[in-house]
Length: 151
Image 1 (cartoon, rainbow, N blue to C red):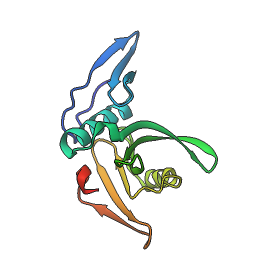
Image 2 (tube, rainbow, N blue to C red; image 1 turned 60 degrees about the vertical axis):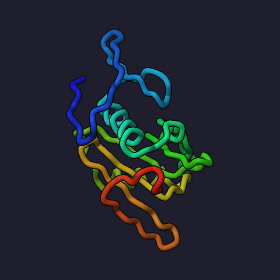
Image 3 (cartoon, rainbow, N blue to C red; image 1 turned 30 degrees about the vertical axis):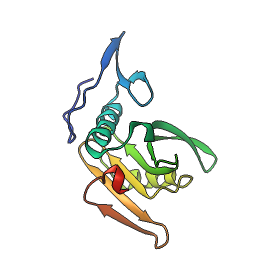
Image 4 (tube, rainbow, N blue to C red; image 1 turned 45 degrees about the vertical axis):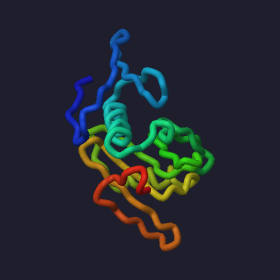
């Protein structure tokens, strides 16, 4: 896989090759996973959250299973508060995938069972962060991803 330069700080990724596959160590899952373009974005973005925005490693989870309308889905990253309640969901796309309304709709569906106040979508080049006010139904786009202590 040709790693693409992202609109994120460099991350000290540990990779290895097995056969014809490149694997990357995911510090959240504590194992090596296949390095796809989407995984490249996930690893850089989670590193950014922890190193630049103060998100505690123990409050992040990758590939979290959830039920959406009776169907098993996987949320790319879930960020929890100090009481282990979901606070943010993050959806990643490969750098070449445009972030469209369809991606927002997918992320919104994933949020139905979680009801988190923040949604982040990133393809590594563009990043969108929204704060949801459930009392008014308003979704506010933020200029940047907030620091963990300001969520």
